[in-house]
Length: 399
Ligand code: NDP
Image 1 (cartoon, rainbow, N blue to C red):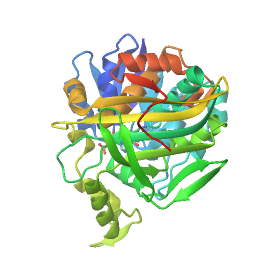
Image 2 (cartoon, helix red, strand yellow):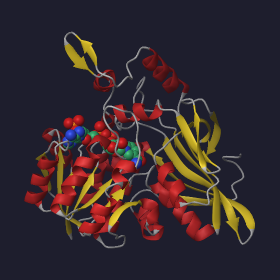
Image 3 (cartoon, rainbow, N blue to C red):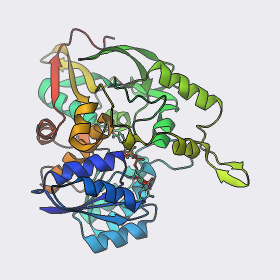
Image 4 (cartoon, protein in one colour):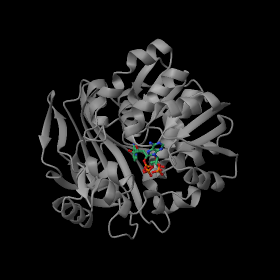
């Protein structure tokens, strides 16, 4: 029985709060805090299983987070605000002696670059304080790292090739929308592509490498090579990998909208002067686009995210595909969410559960693949994200 402080009342924060409230034997007292108090209150009012406390906090300001932690006294903070707040919240956890978990690594607001180096630099401070910080515990990163670890533990002696494939075959009925925070999503997608091969990173032009990948229960979908944050920790923690890549599906409609938006300059992050005011074009675009938490109603179709892993077992080469499919309409019925927020929020809840029940512990800063995958994988099946393993799949990724 523990107190949990959730920061961030967006689309992922809503799922996390709903799912944690369903497990009062672990999360006995929950506070949801965010920049806009009314959003916390709206989520709290949807939850009947237990009373959710709410609070206003600007998590860019570490002192405000410290104050809130000191008054509520949680055992840990689950951060599902934006990557910009990661360091301020980690600082607050260190000051107040509480554990930390997030789903996306830090990126500086003025540079579209995400990297673990800023958060890994906190390792010795968390270790010295006897605290645990778990980074990137959503689906990708998060579950994809754990799938890889599970595959190595149960199916291989050594793994050599990894392809993470992420498909959203859903239809939200809007002309253009992003499934999680538009600003973070567009910053990620417009970056140069990057993958790991033979001990070094290989760069590609944005969205220039693509091919059809066949997804179970969905069929072939054009999938684009991207740099995604879990690749950074995975190549470090699985040094036998000869190649590691990440692929994501986009519809032609999405790509066309994105190209036009880029061409007119509205995805830029450098402030421009407009009628005497400084505005960041991408922040302005975010204000125009649908809020990801509003997409759930009427969303149809499925997501399918998994890992193709090739390696050696008893001297023989083999491949496995391990994946989850998640249905947008089903998760809306359960907690007013769409599948992208659901597949992020459920692993974050399970990660917190692992930490609070002592199934996962450690002193320092960790990525999810550094933990034992088994208890987490068991909970995925129980809490709404069942997974499958296909050995030597006949269709799928190919070369
Ligand atoms: P949203 O934009 O829907 O929600 C973000 C929330 O954080 C909003 O409620 C926002 O408040 C709040 N927030 C922003 N700044 C502050 C601040 N300074 N202080 C307090 N609260 C703040 O985003 P999502 O829910 O879609 O995404 C949440 C996180 O999940 C992101 O970091 C995203 O990158 C990550 N993610 C991870 C995935 C994974 O698989 N690992 C996949 C998808 C997302 P306000 O309402 O006032 O704007």
